[in-house]
Amino acid sequence: MLTTVLPFLCILPPLAYGVIALGCARSYFGRRRPAPGHTPPISILKPVKGMDAGSFDNFASFCRQEYPAPWQIVFAVADPADPVIPVIGRLMGEFPAIDMELVVDATIHGPNHKVSNLINACPKAKHDLLIVCDSDIRVSPDYLREVAAPFADQQVGLVTSLYRSPGVAGAATAVEAMGFTVEMIPNVMVAMKLEGLSFALGASMAVRREALEAIGGFAALADYLADDYQLGNKVHKVGWRLELSDCFVESVMHREDLATVLSRQLRWSRTMRVSRPGGYLGSGITQSFPMACLALALSGFSGAGWGAVLLLYLVRAAVAMAFSRCYVKDGIFPRWLWLLPLRDFLAFATWALSFAGNRVRWRGNLFRLLPGGKIVELPKTFETRGNGATE
Image (cartoon, rainbow, N blue to C red; front, side, top):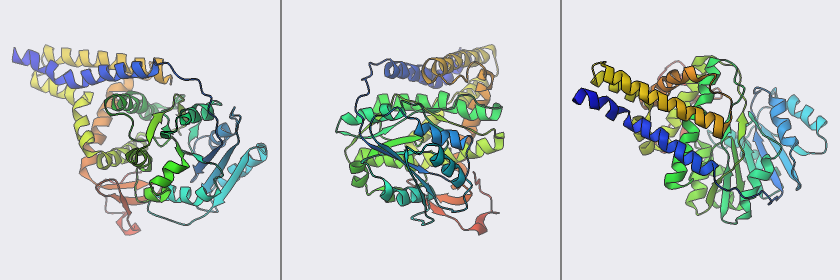
C-alpha cells in the first residue's frame, strides 16, 4: 500500500505547481486589458558589447515603432574597436529620421560593465521615461505603445516585459528557449499571484527617471550581476508599483552547442540563488525530474512508480503545450516536446550545481558572487583554477 501511494505523493508538488501556474496564466492573460493611450516621450538606452544574432534587425525593430510621441535611442559601447559600431552606423544611415546617438566611453563604474555603459549613456537621455533593452532583443511595432501605457498611472515606477524565442535553430538552442516557456514565465505568473511583481526582467525594463533617481540611479546597480532583478526590487522597495507589459519581446539566439547553453544557465542559476536564496532553495521540490526519480526509487521501480512518472509528464506536457500555444505563442511545442524530460534534467542539474560554487563568467570576465547578489571581478590569474566558472 505504501509503495503504491508514495510515488504519487512525490510527484504532487511539481504536478500541483504546474496546474497552479497554468491557472495563474489563464487569469493574467484572460483579464480585460486597457487600451494603450498614454504616449509620453521615451529614451531607449542600449548597452552593447559585440555582435548578437541579427544585430541590425534587432536594432532596426526599435526604429520601426508606430508611436506618436518623440523617442530617442542611445547606444552605449565601451570599446572604440567594437565590431558592432559599424552596424550602428549603418542603422543611423538607414533611419535618419530617428533620433539616435552613439556613446563610446570605456569608463568603468563597477564590476557590472553593462551598468557602466548605462551610466555613461544616461546623460544623453532627453526624456523622463527610460527604457533599458538588451542588444539581442527584437520588438514588434506596437512595443513602445504597450510599454508606455501603464505609466498613465502615476504610481507605476517600472514596467517590464516577458520574453520568448520563436524560430530556434537546433536542439541546444531549443533547450534554452523552452526554459522561458516552461520555467521562467510560469514562475513569474505564480510570483505575481502570490506576492505581486517585485522584480524586473532584463530583456525589457521601462522606468521613470524619478523612480530611478529615488534608488540612486544606475550607480546603485553597478556592483550587482542581476542588475535587472535589483532594479525592479529597489524601485519596488522605495514605494513604486511595478507592472508587467502585455507585449512580449523576442530574444534572438545564435545556434549554440549544449555546453555554452548550460554554462549560461548555470550563471543565471547562481545569480538567482544569491538574489532570492529562500525561494530558490524551495523551488527544488517543484522540479519534475528529481521528484520523478524519487517516485521511482521509493516504489522500487514498480508499476506504481512508472505510473506516477507517466501521470506527471502527461500533465507537464499538457501544461507546457498550453503555455506555448495559448499564451507565449513561441511555436516551440509540439516540435520540441520530446526534449522536455532533458530540459527538466538539465534544469535540476544547474539548480544543484548552483550551490557548488560562487564563480561565474560573464562577457569574458570572471567574477565571484557575494551574498545578496553583489559581484567582485577576479584577476586573470584565477582563469585556470576552475571551481565552476561559467559563461
